[in-house]
Length: 389
Image (cartoon, rainbow, N blue to C red; front, side, top):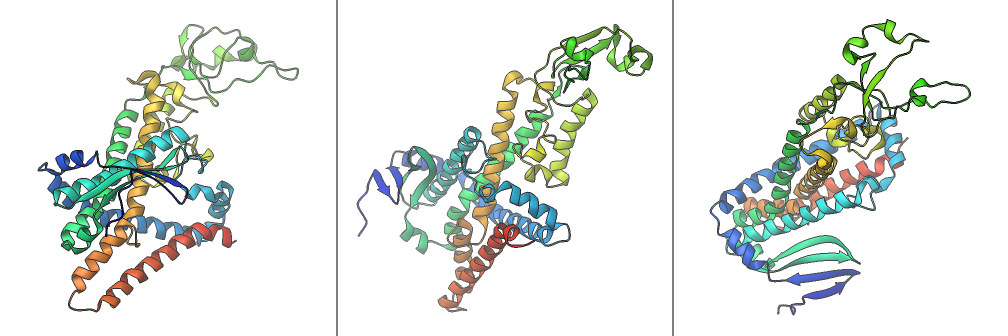
């Protein structure tokens, strides 16, 4: 007998809000012709995402246990174990505002995709809702009828299961594509030389720049009415004791001197490295060692101009975290670990392929063995830096 429907429930310290209001929307989206091909695409994406997750696990384990692993282990230890939790406010490097916005969107589209594909295949959806810890939204869910899902054809149930991780993967790709496009519009705000820091005047140091009121974030446009790009090649203009007139424009922030060519190079390097190395994936903007790498970080953003104007850092950061959280959610959920979506899809596939050839207990052992093996690898990856060296 079905348990009674509860629109509000408090269970294990989590507030559960259920509603049937979104069923109409899922029914409507499920009737679109594109939903069928979309569901198949999501199914093909899942093993790709799982493969990438496994690749990252093997690469990270090989580095940790390599001769160069000691330095990496020390750095990981300095970040504390909370960096492994993709929860804003708990993970100190996931910003609360951008992180929660991205996480909520990721969870809603993930669960919504399950419901849309289920309805397109005629499977009933009992309810949808949100999970709250106190006042913080920590999850979303769509309750597809489990009994129907279990007896459905393997190709149908696996499409429903793959839809969540698949849509997260697609959303991550779209976010990073938009990010690249916007980063490519970033140009130096001036043709002058950016002032990232100014020596402070003191009893032991006379700083003409400080006395003149030059501030970090300014752009020096000319020296003695000679354009800066020409003046830099004429050392006679700025020998000790010479009086020089500087033409400057005001910027925003800065720590080190930087030229327009360096600013342009940073943008090109960031976009190019995404296709060549994993550094942009590992180097998130909030990590201390990455502040001089990401061109839209606080250290450099004031020296760039863009069609987005003052909204540029907001847009860039939101897109980055939309990409980062959706991508990680997609590859993790795609892993063949039961009861993750990938694990359930793997279990259904194994049983469909082995039906009539192997006993069900043997098929269950295959899923269990793979799950234990992968969980052990993840545990080693997360705990290894604290157990070795």
